[in-house]
Image 1: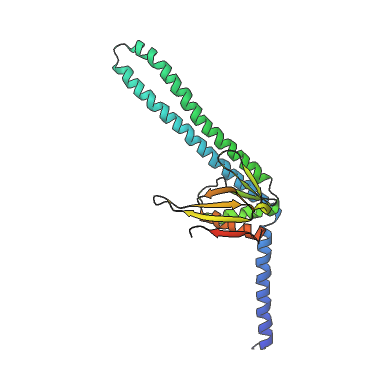
Image 2 (image 1 turned 135 degrees about the vertical axis):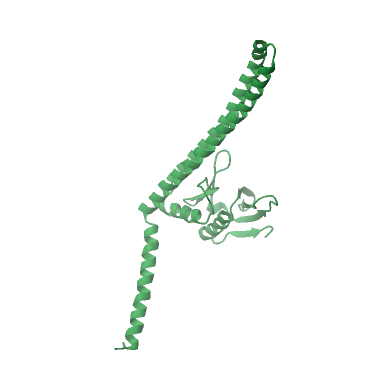
Length: 234
């Protein structure tokens, strides 16, 4: 028995409406506070793992560098006729190298730890809306591991994380941005954005992923539709 055409159309419309409602509810569920907080916990765990790997690399470099000098010392010591005298003369140099290399790699490890802690603390302070923005940002990246983002949107401000310290810029102060692609012929391109207030440049940030570069511009336009974007070389 064939159904009337009006019933078929109504059935098709109901299926379409049900699909739209399902997709909307699925998207809403993905942005609920509990889901966002679960994402935050997982992200922090990944960032800490990356931090530990970086610190481990610094420690391995310290062991390698100091071990290189120890091997060279041992070879000279083995060939020396007066080993005791050679050892007493070499001990201050070995001690200095241990302290110098230990301080250098220890400082790098400490900076990596502090910088990661500052970023993690900033992530934990995000409200649900800003955390949702960060989740959208992370989906735009091509990444093997989680690392410190070059910026965060936080309560009408942008937070930046340079090598030392951090920088906060209210979005309302940004009147113009200029974008630049730095073409590295021996490696991947870098992407730089210059921020200007009404009169002067106030900051610049460089990033290595085009996804982060594009997302920053798109989100700034959402937050401040009147912002002027100038492309320098693209």
